[in-house]
Image: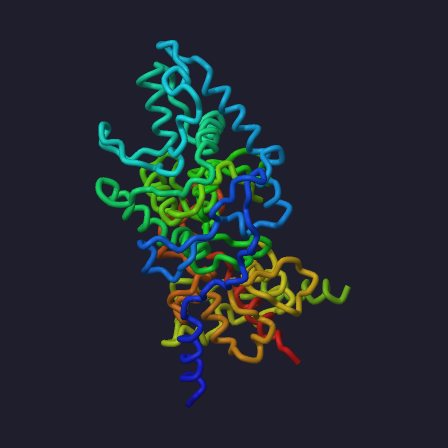
Length: 285
Length: 159
């Protein structure tokens, strides 16, 4: 065998997908406030059978012990301060109709289950809606108030308050029927290698989760923990803003928070976490 | 002092490269195995400069994905790509030049970015601004920086 043939053989071996190391995620257990044991690892949903991911893993497992601990106790979880802000907004009357969220929905625990099933098809509107879109629909059409800018701080805080009502419940978004087209669009985006660096979501979060890229420990990019309190910027972060940051880091022209593309991507990525517990607001780096 | 002298000398040498001799990204000629046999500049690469490119987050940032045992003072070597600590023993200059310029010519599914390519991107951005690219797209590394990194990688040997 000559040198070039040998090189080509090595190339073929090297080109095979690099399966992430099983040791990448730790084996800790996430128990919330010493009471609620969260499902942070689960069998991959059936729609991921064509990937080589057989276990879905919460981003919590890829963080340092100290960061993990912050999420285990609501008094340590800085995200819960913003949940309190969201709760205050929930009870604040705004708009021409003299209503607050609480005027119709009463107790926040009426929101239990919402974060687990959104983005979700709205039959009356004939569209796929994120939680923030639904909140704005209420504001405009029921309260007579101005809609919030997508991923605005106030919107994220209320979204986190709503998410917190579902903590511990399994993510279970629908992917077929009327949302099938959007789900397929989201999947297409997930695997599209964008930007000057030509990286897709999958390049890092499917092919390389568990590996370090410089100082960053790559997770599966699950969004069951959103809105997420990041130590990096000391506030709650929305899913679409996080997507935007990732796409930007591929040296690409990003999509905007609230865009059709990010709504579709949110549905697809959320569906890759079907079976994991809702963790929002989680704590990450 | 010695290092500075070498770098200055290299800068002078690089500066002496005739622009007309530089192979443009679109003109880079790959073999069927994804190698580039011809130097992109005709000016020998400088390993000291190549090392700086390899560890600079704004340039090559090779260590983001690859471990290089010869650089123990550089923090946080990544695990995404293969370790490079013995690259100089197992790869030729032509292979390394091709892999750096566009690794997908040798490994079609690799996640490695192409460092000497200016077209064929999806939604190319203007640096890390998130905005669309304007005008001609510059390659991530210059031709001479590619040559310098090739030279640096060729120095990486286990023994």
